[in-house]
Length: 262
Image (cartoon, rainbow, N blue to C red; front, side):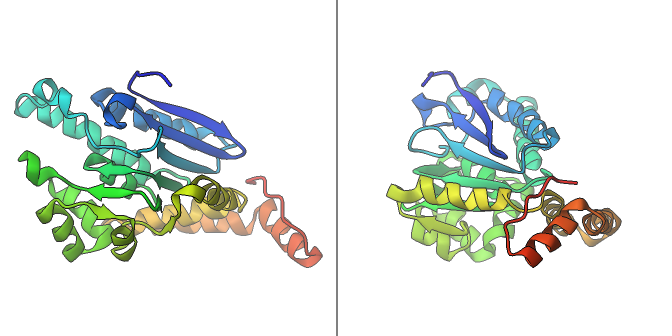
């Protein structure tokens, strides 16, 4: 494995795998990595062969957060901090608004900005060795309204207060209890179980997945900003699709459907 801080992209069998890789710093995100993520997500969205996206970390950890070693330069003053925060926000938004299902696979450490990235995904699956923490209070770093809102929207105000105020480590059991993750698997079988789950998603009708994802994106917006017509058009496209005909035929014939996204 290279020591270069980067995000690796691998596509196979309908699944795109984005891997955070910064081995010397437990996959901490550099500014360049934050900036690279939106384009990588868009490349997956634009690829008709990709039906689901995985976000994972290289090695035994998910992500230790932002690479604090860069802060002396990249957050040296208010102007630099604003530029940095825009890159972080755009990365999180790209994941949250991706047109295809996104799944964070969390092993080991998931701290700070890594928690935000995981929460930007539609689903989070954790290994039993996963550890979650927002240590801003130990750094003197403030979290914006949108940052706190991202966490509170997923796990509620009380659990967010616990996570942020205490700066303590949540283990996988804590994370499952508070809704930080959807499911957990034993570390020894994590890769295989998580792979099976995401493959099951990717086998489903792409137009159905896209319509459901669009609805989830709209539901996160204020009522006045939602676009129900966009979702309705995508639902109508499902009803008129070859895949819907295939799904009905497969059900009648008691076989597995083969969906083609049209």
